[in-house]
Length: 266
Image 1: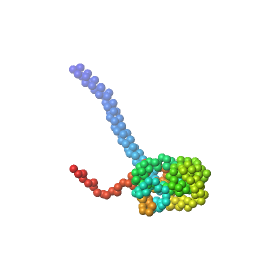
Image 2: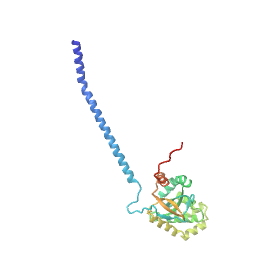
Image 3: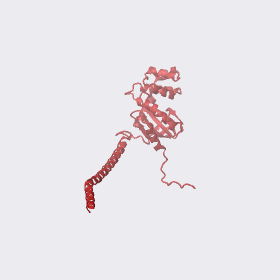
Image 4: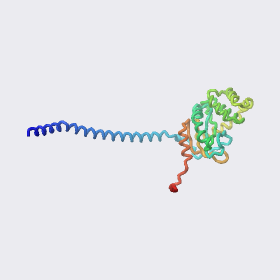
């Protein structure tokens, strides 16, 4: 009888000793659950903030900036690369002395050429927009491009000038002309005549109407008859390939018909 009583007393003592531990363990679990719930709420709030930041960082016209969407631009006579009958046109306002334009030409344009120009989805048009106030050699370099086009070597000169952006003094332009195989005498006569200055000024004026105020500024456009294009998207600055891909995906996506997909044939 005493033995049973001893066992009962021992069991009671052990329960009394461990009960606070069980109680503490349950309290800790509940507190942990609350911490996890709080962390989840914080993560959701952070995700919401990230989405808001992305919206803020999405390029959009600045206050007072022209929205060029649906504007029609005449690109008659402009240098073209790719299929002239392509449905879409990439129109780039650029200049040869601009370092951002150089980065764009070296890093982004080759990928655009592989994905869209060589595949026939779009053609590429270059328009002059020299920023004379900050790049003293930009205007004459634009003239050099036009004078090279006169001899059928615009793109050769284009690539040469972008590869030598620190060497665009007038005398150096003649050396570049020789390097790409131009008749140096005819080239120099063309440069001295300033015969393409008015055309360059026209490009600048047309770009300004579309809200271009920096280079490079690129438009994705729908090709129209008679060398005209209808602007669909504007991409400002030297953006990465991903930005262009996203814009093209939107342009190339088939319009929603609202019809349910046809049932698969068995």
